[in-house]
Image (cartoon, rainbow over all chains, first blue to last red; front, side, top):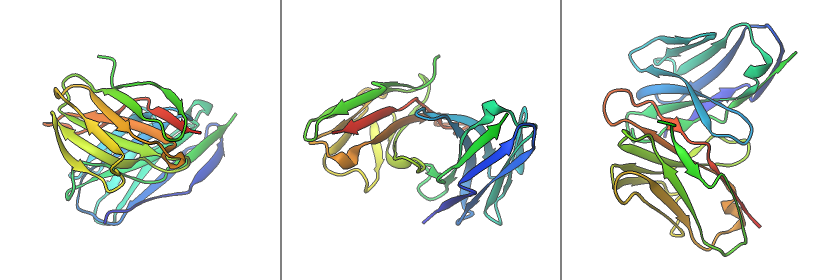
Length: 113
Length: 114
């Protein structure tokens, strides 16, 4: 059974810092991995999708990497801003049971002005 | 296209009542998913439709839950005889069948059972 873990559960940093959020998964047989942002009481906003054949994806100040063999992904946020404060979730789409995403519990990020 | 739309955004109901939620996916997306999210947790898969066919259901989906997608467009999720443990955010997502399978989520329906 695929399990996804995100560490740390919460992170607080001063504005302007670069930071890394971690995601690990137990089964490397995945189609892709997706990073989401969730603001309190809201739905999920897709940030980046990495296919299993890719190593990384970039969008603006965000860069996500994927090391499928070791079951790890990182989300790098450059020059953090208070508006980046949110919960960040990673999810994998397993090859078996490929119709559903399996989510981690998220990292709650706070950027202090 | 305005993305995935869910209605209502919030629902408060008394224990034992039935509730129904609606999801309108992105128009060209064949795949539609329902997830449930409780406070501090990641979303958990409930069920999946490809067009109008319900192809997968989680064991989380008890007999009190039913979902439909009658014409392969919008979907409804009904909970009968609600219990306090049903209180959660119910999220709908859609994705294309071919090409990018990136999932796009709606804003969710927050259910509170009192």
